[in-house]
Image (cartoon, rainbow, N blue to C red):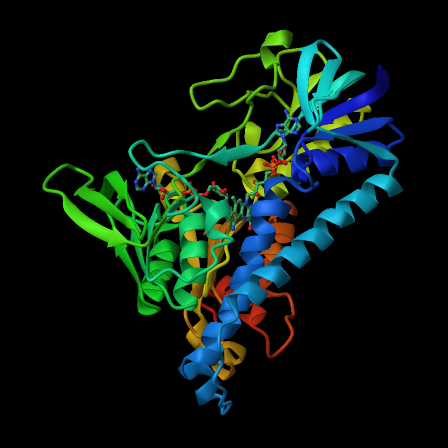
Length: 466
Ligand code: FAD
Ligand code: NAD
């Protein structure tokens, strides 16, 4: 039996960051990962491969359509899908190897195989050959992540009916891709395949896309995506699917009930959310149970079992890589007696479409529901010189500030490269900045970030560029 200070189950952004921080803090740490590579969902089949395809497909689409021609660049691109997938896979391999390097650098042992909790401080790992390794540890961190939520009647086979993993490695461009769920995965991967030439229809149960996102920002994004050719069937549900060798027939009904229509597609992507993953984990051996959704509860990253901690997608909060990472660091710091903490009010959210949507803090809907008086400062990218010169003027920056104190409560951006700009407001809001603080801060010209400053100025109706 090998003995450790901390054994971490799962090598995703939660698990690998916990392992690295444990190594940095001088703990003897092991990370158990059943996949053939480290990095979890994010690096292998999530954030990174999806961003690789979003980047490549955006360039292809720009070169293919009027955008390049208008810039005076005349080319006739042809799609080499196999190469696009290959460069994505190579980037993913590079990143997962990078985590192996960081483990070596920080003296973390990667124990290859699936971990099972046998009891307090006891874990057995079963490798792909059936070999067993027994580990003991003072502390165990569960970071086993999540998996796609299945949809009854629409069975995922990853041939015709895909989950996100299947949709990230198709070998042909669909003629008609039906996406079930207008959430983040549906919009990002729907965008990839639309740009590469597919007809894309998104079927969403609710009457809006991206529930939880500021409604005005969501509507603006939907309009932009519709202009790009994605069609939306809102307030609709898929009740069954029949698969043949060449495609799928879907029965689609109004969400409120009513007569069904048949939709034909050659591929279907089921993207209706993800659920916590605890299969074969043995949490019952330390007295832990999961809730209806399969989630393990935590209080400040501790479970109800002494010495067992839980972080990332398998526990409460948004299923985001940076949330898992923050929890990892806070959790390990608590294990060594430091004051690790996560500010759940300021976890940014980004949808990497074109335009992108990025937000942090409260939405207008939340502030109204809380009865909190607020002021709004908005600034459109049509009035931003850099966006104009680049012909990327869709969207806006919106700052919500407390009516009385001017403290920034929420920021909602739809526009070019806003994923890279939201961090400015994350920092400002961590320091409890007022809108005036941003309005008085010099921003470089000409940049899209000036729109963020102008929106803050406009909280008092004082934008100078419109
Ligand atoms: P995971 O990354 O799911 O890692 C858990 C790991 O644990 C897995 O590798 C699994 O094999 C392993 N494991 C499970 N059980 C055991 C066991 N018993 N023993 C050993 N190993 C085990 N988030 C963002 O913030 N930005 C994005 O752009 C983004 N894009 C995404 C795109 C897609 C298509 C998907 C599916 C997700 C995306 N996400 C994104 C979400 C992000 O991937 C997750 O929030 C993040 O990976 C969660 O990290 P985690 O460590 O909790 O779990
Ligand atoms: P999601 O929760 O973002 O969206 C699911 C959508 O499906 C919702 O709009 C929901 O109303 C709809 N829906 C649910 N049941 C339905 C049904 N039966 N028929 C039609 N629509 C239905 O989930 P997702 O897009 O699958 O993504 C899963 C998670 O992965 C997200 O929670 C997100 O945190 C994470 N993710 C993040 C990013 C990013 O940060 N850019 C990218 C991809 C995934």
